Image (cartoon, rainbow, N blue to C red):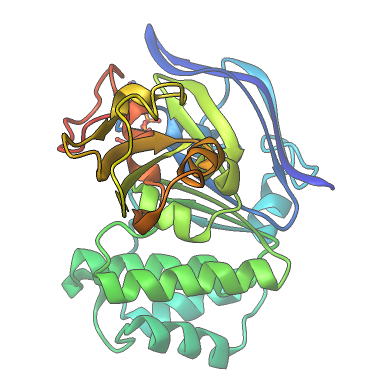
Length: 309
Ligand SMILES: Nc1ncnc2c1ncn2[C@@H]1O[C@H](COP(=O)(O)OP(=O)(O)OP(=O)(O)O)[C@@H](O)[C@H]1O
């Protein structure tokens, strides 16, 4: 499969400050790639390097086979970009601003602009400077999507959106993928990335801490379980299971509760030797897995969720 983005040992320092360290990463054609990390991890730095908004200290980036520095004009034509700090000329109304950008990009059917605006609930007659933060973000989304670019690069795209609009945005991402477009989106919200991404990269302190498919990450993530038995089960029955210290059998030997990580296969084989009257297992929580990567990161936010132990 062709790579739409290729990053090789990409490093950016701001004076003495660490921005990004030795990032090597490929984003494949047609995938939705979720780029996750706590505040200050280096997500925006990576995205700005892709668009030549800043220059690398060392290493290189190739986007759609182009070099961001040399091929900036062609790159901008073929990429839809939403900046994390999206700003636009406040004096215009939404309609004329979007039509202006559409003309710059060589023309976009008006009906398509109207359709995106309508789906997101964006009033095109409003003056941009009077828009709320969330509504301004919708302008940013429409301008990124409207020319149906081969690659969408979206920095914290759902920031400020209410949950309904966030869902519309996720639908738009899924439709873009179905149409063969590639999406690279940063976020610090695991649940939205989990809902739509094929692969996830987690960045921490400027370095790639994890890179995997959502399906594989889910396999390694933690599930809460509760099992009840028709007849008491002897103590120690589950002691040989991996991660047994996170399982507890009650004194009566009829209820097992706790957490398992990874495949439930070993547990199920032990359970099969007993009479199980009920079984409850939650969907693996990627959120917790993500928080375990947060733990100890510089600038990491404090979270209420405990890391997956
Ligand atoms: N212009 C700059 N000058 C100095 N340091 C910078 C500059 N831009 C970013 N940094 C530093 O580089 C590191 C990475 O920042 P970056 O903005 O890429 O993180 P991020 O993952 O996008 O964070 P957030 O989720 O808060 O937007 C941080 O330590 C930040 O302070």
